[in-house]
Amino acid sequence: MAKERGRAMAPELVQLVILYLMAVNLAAFFLMGVDKRRAVGKKWRISEKTLFLPAVLGGALGGLLGMRFFHHKTRHWYFRWGFPLLLVVQLLLVVLALRQAA
Figure 1: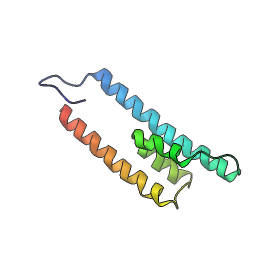
Figure 2: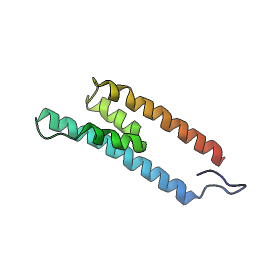
Figure 3: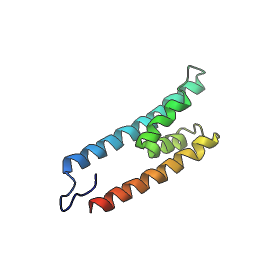
Figure 4: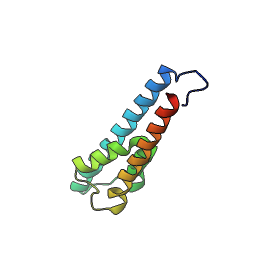
């Protein structure tokens, strides 16, 4: 994703990365809502590993927003601290990528 000796990052690649991040964040948000609804209805639940997967793959913001919006998994330390930590790491990676591309 870095700029190679005078060549800027392709706009198509930037668009693809933005679309990917939007999709994975929406998935993380959606999964938190679905699992909350299932928890309230005493139905089969989504595993915690599955809830963490989109957050690890770039969707920490969506997972964190879903956790707050749906008031879901807010008492579990690994969600309460893990999602914000993942978000900080992901934001740092974005900043580094943008600095390399500039």
